[in-house]
Length: 419
Image (cartoon, rainbow, N blue to C red; front, side):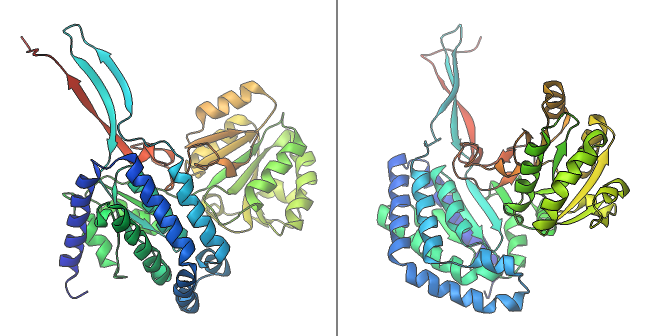
């Protein structure tokens, strides 16, 4: 890009214009685009795999781990999954125009609270090409124009997907710039967009902690943040220990590299011996590296001694920190101090303990007797999601279609004036 400032200004201005055109687009038109895009992905799968191969060839140069390379890879099966995900969004109710609430005033005014799009979303994400399609689908379905800024590791894959999404927009008569991909890998482009609050209504960063901290510091518009997933499983003194072991193993091992995997577990001292004797061999068999306090190491000789930093670390790998706590109060205090307010679970048969845990643990999802892996838009019945927010404003937890909207008041009268 010869003039980065001009390029980013043009993209942002086009997104603003497209967002205004989307205000009058019907749900049927948006669904037609989703269907057309899904069909194009299936029809042109070979092109997408070829583009993806260029990214895979360059992946070692970026120092990607084997797990990261696997997330980057596109196969026919994964492309079918991307197409199917677009079609799943078709089935979700269109939130735009929904009347959230209404009332009739004594003077005859009819006051309605109506759901509307946010406007323009600037979405920054990691090197998973499927996110390109998912984010575009959710933003357009909720009436928003989106500027997509993927990682340099997936540039060829993202460009190929973007071309098909844009082709679908043209075919179905939607504004062409409703979806735009930032085609430069220059990191300064992000800084330029973050200055453009006159065009961009919200920024959503989905990536490493340093990226999110940078965006939060530089953005001149609201940011929906997705910080670390330092998630806990607490095994209470009244837990069903067999259940607790199943939940912990699933929370840690089912998919270690995602944000709702468990990164730490706490166990009440009254059941520490029984629980750790039960779960220790399972953790060892699964290849999980445990970093625990002195009490944990008494029961798990293979565990390493945990540092203060271990309890504040999102491993995204087969590693977990652990601690024996004296009671529920200490468990809650530890989670609120060391967690990231993402997802935390308690295993207990004591209703009072469960109720206190769900009341006092300050996280986007608090789970009783189930895996942390359930904090997910699809698993919660919300449909697809653009991320899991650890913020409290404007959205918290899985961000689906409704979280990509705001509202306005629409008032009908028949000549009333205020005295």
